[in-house]
Length: 467
Image (tube, rainbow, N blue to C red):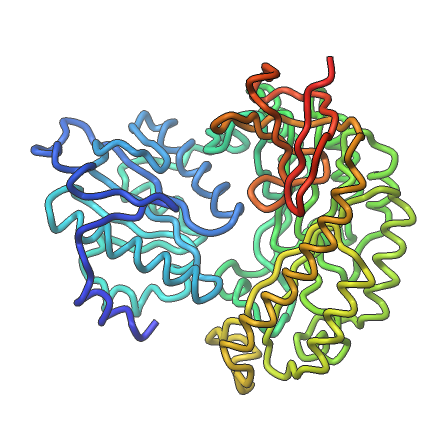
């Protein structure tokens, strides 16, 4: 964070980043001449799906207070901006800082009136940021929604708990089942930013799911910092299986997708429910982070490569045909060439259906920050590239086997000449997509369609609608 002040003093005010989109000040803001008669709030979200949920809750509360509010609007008519930041790793922090600075520039140009910052970066670095970016009107932590609402002249309405205005398409929605994390992972600052693990009651989660379905949601993506831990604080036992069982009985809910299961202590009764319920996707996002027992120990993951392989074997045995998504970290302190090759061998043997990789980020106040960051950045990037080259080959081989199969596909959008959707083995944004030529078929966005796969690449499938 030491470069923020320098970046602030040397910033270029010619362009503005809104989420992942780039807008020219000249094109987007010149029409703003006078203050609007009524405040309008634009919420900008950076980072993970958990931040998306937080922004949706904020949006719902503002609308419930009859305040005009939008999410990542491309129009230039909002006079108040709320930036929901990410503070997880260096790249995410830099994106958050750049976005804040560009909106501060917009404020100085008279293009917006107020800039507020919330989310993980604000929670983690608030005091430093107050000094380094004084033109931000106020800063709020991850658990300070009521304070932010008060600043926006709104009241927290308890009757809106469980209600959500979605920022995604209505046919799918993220549903947060808990907040915070109790794990001691060496590299992770999430407990600093999000606090201890707190489970949401099953009744509240089911009620929220019913409300979402009532408004057209067909797929719910369950998210948490650690879904494996769900229920230990409330029910004194791991209660994820019971939660899934209750959600599977929500009428009209066609897909339930489980994300971010910690491998240590994974409750195997989840697999039984998954195999018995047709509307629970044969999909599991289980971040493993490495394939070397030495590195798993240094990362404080509480497991070994051998135990991890046993768990993966059990998962695939109890849920045949399941797609497993995982993430790996390249370049954690202590990772020599031997440990990296062990991870590569682990990936090659295990053949994950979906895999992503991060380079290690040396984060203040984490356990690993006390260790020497001994893998050069160039080597981290080279190792990450090697992991993805290996995974590309694995993914291509798996996808080629799907040619000729007829798959159930949820249509997400139309883009250019194609309708684009996903199978039960794919989560939005991060996984494979199915492309169907729009000239040959008419498909409705948000509907399920039967698609025969006619071709495949490493990360995409191509198909045609089956009558």
